[in-house]
Length: 583
Image 1 (cartoon, one colour):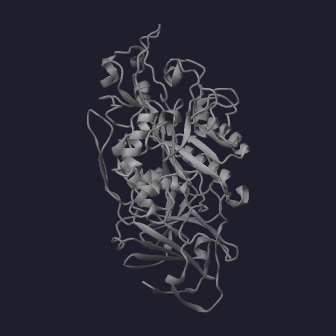
Image 2: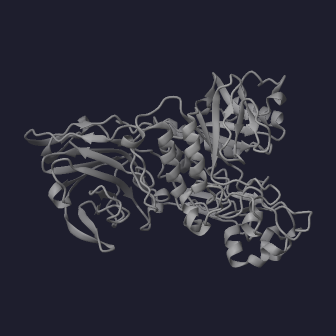
């Protein structure tokens, strides 16, 4: 469709982000009222700033088998705390027979997923692309390299890259039997006979694909000169030249230098376990001190019942990391989720030993979660800090033209945003649960958003959306919904949205805790294009200097912003919005 007869003034859209490229100045707010910093606060994009994020693939793997019947430590501790006082208590479920079964500390927003679930990886790659993460660091530190899971992840990366986006690339982190692990990784993913060969996904440093491991174990192997190798760096080891740390057990964190003596990298993590004897489980379940949960800051454990949501621990590290002006920041982590149940040989032999993850406070995942109302606050906090580190692009502007009324040639209007496509893919995949087995299904994907545009006249605003395929038939209030924040405040409306347009032409306003019909607006649909036109007057906006924040969603299943991470499609994704100033 090239021309649609809508009587408004032809508008020229001026924007730096014609295709929704990296650096999009998204706006948004979390449940705590923390607003994403904008250009006026963080300045323009800075060169030479790179973000790595620890990413895990071991959920439901044969090498880390999920406990049968019971697999969520937070729920188990809430409802059956007595289980934790008896290593062989039947309440442990599949882990009652002894050591070696794995438990989730809580529930990810995508359910207790398996590491080879392409649907989950695609969702995550979109989130991390929006967050401007540059590379994912795959945990292969325990020798396992997770071929099937890596292949699914790299297919998701490749799918997003082919859309013209800039998704994170991939780096492997090895340690145990590092030489053997790097050999296997080279053979399967990088070498001339690689089975899973996605060279566009490789992250390069110093002109070669980067891998992390023990360089001395690479000596004489056929991949030695293929990779740039940085050294695996444990927090209780002496500082290594070229060391890349995945966590730190001191404050402030160490800044690691490369072989040229230049400051290169620093780590930030959501929580830490410097008391290795107790580890995370000792602090979560048995009152042991010396570990630093999510609430830890200024040398104090804080008050987890209130502080856990704010990420004070990782923010304290971010503040220091930002002051160091290093080219790399390594974040731990996105989605580790599980921990093995191990035995103790000391006087606490009845206790279970969980090392890296245990409960909401003593865990370090940033991926959104249903548990303990953590929701997506750590994800939005991460976006905010990455923006402070890298800078961002200026706001979006749309020019209001004063020419005579005429129809709009939407083909000539520059897109404000190009959305991810292919994300209405239906899900049907086994979860990590071993018994009972669970299949996760999601068939809510319907209209796949592609392009968003906006045109302004002296009277109206016209919101244009294009989908990949023909727009479905109207079907309820969750069909093709336009969300509007018109007062530059997140304190009013529903999560900041003052108005929405449902069913194509029904304008509603959020008043006294519910949505109320206001009036009908003009809506036109032709094949895969839809335009909603609303007057400034109906929105209560001034014609001069108007600013409007908006997003689109389709097939939302419940009135919860977290639903935008899961169901139907949303543009932009999750809680992110576009804010446009009218000139």
